[in-house]
Image (cartoon, rainbow, N blue to C red; front, side, top):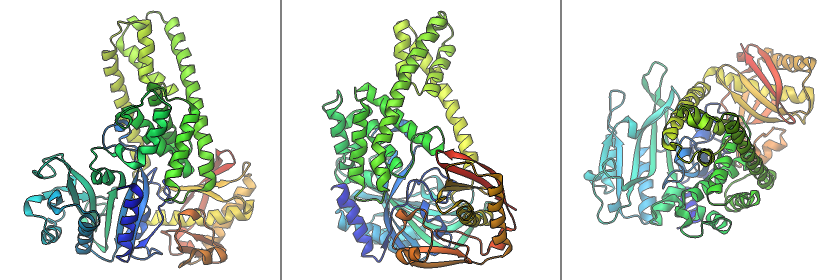
Length: 593
């Protein structure tokens, strides 16, 4: 089965089950400060799991583009990738476990013709917080899954969430496919030949800040099936790289590298194909290589691809541009990207490749100079050599393997193994520090839709309109970030905002707060919303029906929510700082009392 066949089959199936097919959200979450990227199909739907009305209704399905970089160093093995596509269907307070499980079973066994004998499932075993999920167990049994293929496991395996410290969560049931030869054996936790292919999450609890698990007023279903993994299973492949989503990328790599045979098995080729697919989609969604936040991830992906390319003589910037164009060809039929971003991406990535190749050249010169100036360096402490190697990587993005090669040219008998052990310890410490920073930056979790965050979200709308009023309508929003403490708002403007202009903006927002304007929400066709004057900052991600939030005659925007009930709840608004975010983009930090 090909990828387009699986996408279509999945969406058609759930459309026939009265699901509305919604657009994929961008990789950059619109109003979620808790994650850098959209990492699952449910991320853009969090407000709706918490009770907000979705303009498309209570039954939804889509193919969501996702990005995860936690396991970036593992890419190149059989299963890990950074960019992936997630097939998902959702019930927002509508159907429950019976329908969800029965439809999953029907799609797998009827539409995909997977034999029941090759399926096994796991369910939540229960603990002091919640009972065993006997309901799911009984449903699976009624469908013909024998008891010796139903395994009860704990929270580590069969419980989802909350994504942060508090919020929606609940038991899940995972579906596994037997990939081994011969008759299926054992249970999923006992045999690695059982591969997970689908996960049905039943969000029926809310974890409180006190650690209690309370029943949710609205019970919802969230399911996810990885496109790449499912394609590998259906085509009887033992890895995701032998599927059609990678085939044409490998052809380009083979045509322009030293690897001509079994290229889908080559680790370096896999890294190039995966990372350039991810960097391409990031660029299509407006994330370009840089030194900060999301841009740093994009830069890291490109540089890892270039380092892998050097190993197989695939290092021409023009060849990398070919990969970007091929990814666009593969994915633009399925996703709504900005045409301008897609057309600009090859040149942007090509420029980044050139810069990094120059960086490698500069790094070689620095390394040579350091060795010449410190003749005893390579005869000294292995830890000093390890620190130099790590410094080269961190400062220049210089490939560790290249550093080792250069060091051994100077000293052939250098104990690289001992140095490498120390380098990996330095990496481990660095990664732990990064995790700690990220945990602090994103500690709110997906469920951070507290009253304060709702108020700050509302303040962002008021600020957007105030900025347009004072600076002109061209000062359109380019992004926002909300934490429980403050809001950050990016907008188009070619010069620094003057203190007088900032005061006018701040006063205008506070005027609307004093008026205690009611925040009203209406669901309407997108075309009607546009004609009414509503501002749509992220138009490409919206479906045919949209939610429009209005605050008197002052502000009207497309938005998913959530918001305060009235502007008076914000009490007061204060601009803390204004600065440049990038060329032609300014940034305002603000707080409310």
